[in-house]
Amino acid sequence: MTLIARHENNLYAEDAVRFLRVLRVLRVKIVPYLYSLLLILITQSGTVLAEDDQLSPLLRQRPGEDPRPTRFKPYIYESVPDINSSASDFVPVPDRWRQFYTGKWYDPYNQNVLKGDIPVFGSQADPWFFELGIISDTSTESRRLPTPVGAASTNEPEATDLFGDGRQFVMAQNLIMSLSLYKGNTAFKPQDFEFRFTPAFNLNYADFAEDGVLRVDPSKGDTRTDNFIGIQELFADVHLANITERYDFISTRFGVVPFISDFRGFVYNTSEPGIRFFGNYDNNIWQYNLAYFRRIDKDTNSGLNSWFEDRYEDVLIANVYHQDTPVLGHTVQANYIYRADNAGDHADDYDNNGFLVRPASIGDERRKNIHSSYFGLTGDGHYGRLNVTEAFYWVTGTESHNPIAGRQVDINAAMVALEASYDMDWMRFRASFMWASGDEDPFDDEATGFDAIFDNPNFAGGDISFWQRQGIPFLGGGLVNLVNRNSLLPDLRPGKEEGQSNYVNPGLRLYNLGIDFEITPKLKLINNASFLQFDKTEVIETLRQDSSIDRNLGWDLSSGLLYRPFLNNNVQLRVGTAFFLPQNGTRNLFGEDTFFDVFTNVILQY
Image 1 (tube, rainbow, N blue to C red):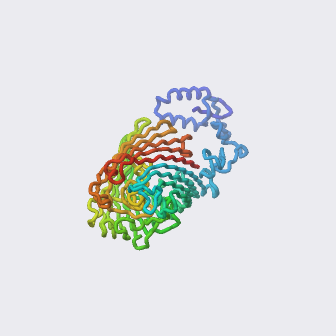
Image 2: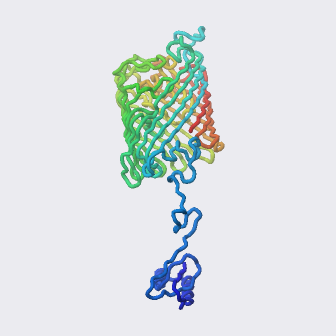
Image 3: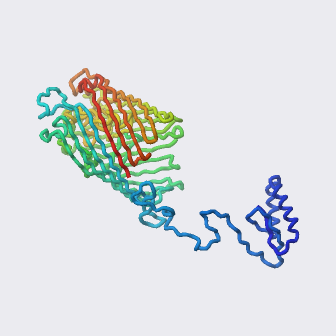
């Protein structure tokens, strides 16, 4: 920086210039305060700052006259107009969202009014945005499951065995539309208001080799085509308050609200009518939920929400999360869930295919109510490079009448799950363990078999594994299932969509090893091997009248391939296969056959 004195005369200018040049050379060696003082003194004598490094002649100011006005040249950048420019030098833009490129409504990869990039109405201070999401999910599946010979009729009249042809083929097409209108700029603070509506359209087809499995009436054949429209989300999200200057907040959602009770969905993972209060605190270190839901039935063949068919069940959930506990990168959650299922006070319920679902067609088939409380402690995160997920649940309460025990029972059951994984370059190694307690005395007054409310866990291979992907029938081809689709628990209930929980069950021990390969950024291979055991066998032995049922169920071997051609989730192609290799316990129940499934899944997303 140099100094220029502006005046008509240039007396002493050369001496002043030399002095300033010496100052510039020595200023690094002079106390900064002394250097600043010298500059101030020279400035007060009639000098002003200039913008270049060349020293112009110092001119003495004429006594009695004001200094001449000085016009400074600004630093010039191509994108910044001159600060002295007039209004004609500026180009107006509509708003801060449309400065350079307005985008097209059909282009999902650039600015788009349908993706919430540009306001649809409102002022710049209070903009309203609209988001449209469309998902097409097409799946096909060929499988072989233990399937009983039709009771009243069969495709093979000479079949005398308990189990018939287990070949099955199913296809499902889902079209899900999500329409969201919200107010507020979500880049730095929570949105002020949101209204979301998500209808889902389902078309499904099934072709079984045995009659009387798809419908209770065997005269309707061994194929079925069905469709349904369900409302998966319909809620308003209202921002109630900011409670700190860092936008820690409290909000509420009411309507048909999706909710997952923990990190992996071990106990409750569904969408039901209700109200949810949620928020965070202390710069997002604490997060919390308080929710109430009045559950409705699901459609039998699609699994979508029915049109508000009450199932007379209330669920209350309260949980709190704390980040970086006990180490950085790991979050713990404390969970409490209360469920009051009063379906026993109402008439029997049959599903859309004519099968009895409430009460369960097992034991003495009497109606029941369930009041249960779940206490959970779960965690998710990493310890250094080791990724971990932990879960512990204890459930207590009462069943007014358990059909297997034939009496009222007190519930006292537990579940433990642990998964650890380690990333090494393009590979991830996984190990998982799960224990769900079983009941060793089906006739006493204590039910110790763990069961969930509506689980859908992403654990030990998830929906690629045979045990979790398939609903394996136990009685009547599906009147009661050993394990239900998208569940890990062998809970002996007609179906989790419409049936009631059952806490007199054999429980489960699951040991899993897996390895995932990121072959390319577009291609991922997922592999799992699980060994399954009953925790207790007494309930199964009682129902089958066979005291020699073995604990070991078998090996679940699965592999799936995920291909994303555009390096995003707009197009996903999945294909997979799974085999269940029976051990003595499965052979005691279903014979020697090896069960399998092969599936394809195409997901298109906008």
